[in-house]
Length: 386
Image 1 (cartoon, helix red, strand yellow):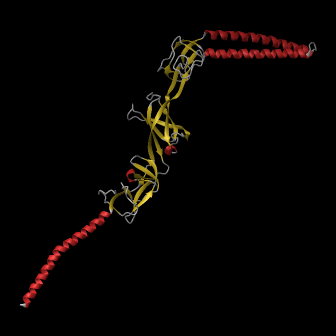
Image 2 (cartoon, rainbow, N blue to C red):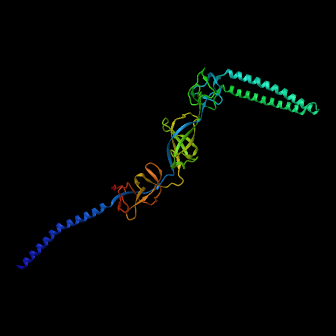
């Protein structure tokens, strides 16, 4: 009887232990799994990017202003009436070609009078010169006094000066008469004509006024063009005479107009902090027009390209641009960097980055130094810290 009771008690104890094991063990396992899950959640999963070498050449796109190689307003140098004009807007002219003729009869009369005065002065000088020579001959034989001989020589010199003045006046009037014919200063195109037959024009005119008393014609040389572009200060040092340059325009999609860097201002504009650069362009086909808007492409070459990172890897903190790194202990390290060239979606890191750094991509603003993280496997979606 005692044995049966003992066996029954042992069976009940085993059953109770089994029941306890069935209820407690799953709870313990669940608690262990929960602990592990919480520990894993404390470590933020991040994706990293490796720095790559920035390209040596960068295409810098800037707006440019197209100007004629030479541009000259034509004014009247002689007052008178326009007799006729021979070149209208759009006409291609050669250097020295007549543009208009000014009728100034009073100027022709002044030239005739000046020539007569010069002839009179020449006759007076010849007479005074021969008289002075005779008196010098008589002075040698003591027939006249030395004072009288010197007076005759001085009179001859005065007559010579008057002759030179008369000849200079003739030359001046001849130049003015030649200005009656307005000519093109160089090969080019007439871009403006502000004169009509019979209009009264004044010598010199009023510059800047599109009227008969102001600018009569405007001539531009368009077979070659000058293109002006303002390069930002950060890129100014990379522009050299060997820099490759070309232009694109809206009216010629897909076409490149090759240009060359001719010169620059060698000084920054204090207002815009830009460097004025001039490009020269061959335009013998007349495709581009002066005054056109163009986009200038400059292939800037860096002497020693640094490393680059995607823009998404940057943190903008009060102390400057910062990147977040993952060290060997899987902890976050924050480092301030200096930005170099901007490539759009990528930027060059001028300082603060090494080739072997593991840089966190898309770091959260709340990411702190010393925080433990876990690097996501390739193709996995990291959790952004917030």
